[in-house]
Length: 305
Image (cartoon, rainbow, N blue to C red; front, side):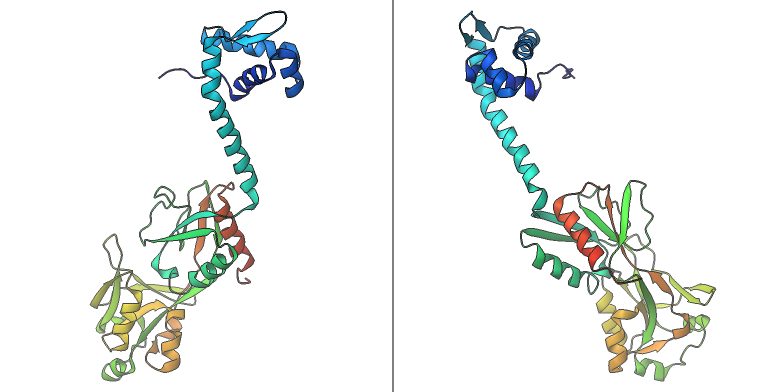
């Protein structure tokens, strides 16, 4: 591969153009605010690097050679475009526009994200949001997303994470009244082994484990899966639970309406574990404007501890 360390810099090429536009070294030096000798040395350095003369110098005038004229014609629009791009980038600091792509688990889609996304879209109408729903433990950034949301995932050292949505969520067990009326209501975790249960399968293959906790006591049970659904099918599983096809384990906040309506009843309520809420994670502190605005909104609307 060619060594580009000695390629002319944008500043050097700009000095050459200034000499041609002003018609001399002294006029160019006044325009640029540098000494005439510095201007002359820069042009000589360019000629030495390229191996061709770029200017014809006399005591009264400076004229471009054929090579100098050809070079100037080709780089003038490029340098102008580069300057415009740099100016646009600098001026966009206070603007929020573009695309924000978030890699999220299905668990945050129904109720954690909607109020945040709704508020964000109202505040920033020039931003387009894309949600990539994925429940596997993936590198969201490597997948081309700006940021990710996960529960309790180990983060790489160069990642930053902040809470998003509730600081904690409780996992609940529930079943339809008709199902519980026809079976013995479980009073201890091991009695779940005698029941039909509705369970989720992770994208990687295994069933989502049932971890229960009472005070400092924790237990994991592996009840019979009468009905198995993808972990993405959380609300479909709740429908089957309402129809009496077994006991379900899912986030309590998803079941509150059913508890209030009596379509589902709590099971083993003393054993419901509480988990840390989801976290938004992203690389480094210098982030695109849409993501920065999203992070700031999350921080402002974060529930109190």
